[in-house]
Amino acid sequence: MKIAFVASEITPFAKTGGLADVAAALPRTLHQMGHDLRVFMPLYSTIREKHFELHPVTDLQQMQLMLGDQIFQFSVSSSLLPGSSLIIYLIDCPELYARKGLYTTDADEHRRFILLQRAALEALRVMQFAPDILHCNDWHTALLPLLLKTSYQREPLFRTTKTVLTIHNIGYQGIFAASGMLDLGITNVIGHIRSEDRHNGQINWLKEGIYQADAVSTVSATYAREICEASGGYGLDPTLRARNDEIIGILNGVNYDSWNPEIDTTLPARYSAKDLSGKAKCKLALLELGQLELLLDRPVVGIVSRLAHQKGIDLLMGSMPTLLRSRNFFLCVLGSGDAQYVEFFNQLMHDFPERVYFHNGYDEHLAHLIEAGSDMFLMPSLYEPCGLNQMYSLKYGTVPIVRKTGGLADSVQMWDGTKGTGIVFNDYDAPAVNWAINTALDLFKQPAVWQQIIRNGMKQDFSWEKQATEYQRVYEQLTQ
Ligand code: ADP
Ligand code: GLC
Image (cartoon, rainbow, N blue to C red):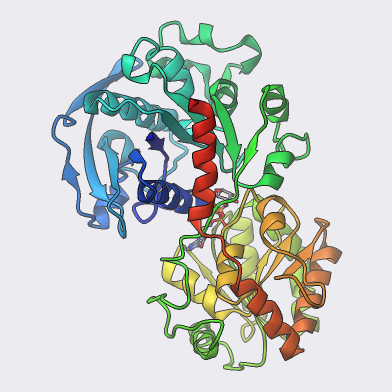
């Protein structure tokens, strides 16, 4: 099939979270399966700084787009996705993408992603690529279905193109002033948007995408159900329910070329389920890095996370100080995000200098070392569309402690004495997370049991080949 895929971040070019992992691995796997893809993302200035090999694409240089009353110039460069023969097309527009981070709170934020979407369609036109499927991801690309149905309605290339919108996180919707919609270049654009969708002069891009896309999917079966309810829909549940098809839930996969302790070259030692001795070396390296006591028999609880409300750090603010006082374990945390959570972990490290290590920042190497060097991995999320780290943890023999929500519920099974891969708690409150951490710490003291849980986890297979086949099925159903 011919597939166009557009996303705001793709690893290793640019990443703030799991979207980048998925937007690299899914197209890569579909490409391996024999599909013909054109994949687009912005050429952020941070990508240039990382010195990827970029090749200007002939015919796609110094193109012009009129956004509102301003002309923007963009060019397209290509680069191979590392570890693959798939080409990624990067939209270069320094005026919009030469900023400090991938996302901003600048007044022209909407323009940055309107340009991405319009430039991708223009590039497809120049390439004369007629996609069977246009796959959009999150709010940054959620206006593509509307563009196809309006400005590009008469474009023969897109006549039979079907659109899929994957929601990676419904907590982020892209809400901008309606006036910004003029930048889409659609004649009478406001006339195309239902009056009930124009709230206080604002337009919700994700909502518009849900309304316009031919199919809507999300990244786990449980999250697909949760977002259709008022408690999980962040206001978009009525829009999702109003569709006359089901919201498709497909669990993300894991790129085991990058996340596999047997071949992970970022680690001080490699290991497998048969021989876990390398894991102990990784634990020592982590403890040393954190300037913690080098005690192998004391468990390490690891966290790698965006420090955002979604991730359940509020729960830990209530329970972690008491737990650290009453139980004997190390806590190793890597994360960046909201100031209040950064302050909380800094304070915790200050209060328990021999037991807690916190690195505030974004660090891929350390993320791998925490996965490998920890004994348990904590994800107490308020909500979690899929979550990748719990699946990485399973592969790294690091027992996940997760709340039963979204993809966490679909990928970790509670240990029941013989079966199960982790510790799962239900309620979003301090007693529940306390129970879960205490249970894990108690089980750790029983080596035979602990080994069994580790082995059950390491046997799990979340490879992308299986998951990409599910997407293929969706594409086939749409284009039949
Ligand atoms: P989300 O996309 O909501 O952040 P996921 O679990 O799907 O959650 O994906 C998070 C991804 O980002 C994982 O690959 C994780 O290792 C990575 N990550 C998160 N925070 C950091 C950080 N501070 N440093 C390095 N990697 C991080
Ligand atoms: C989002 C979600 C996360 C998911 C990721 C990739 O950022 O928060 O749960 O794994 O997208 O789909």
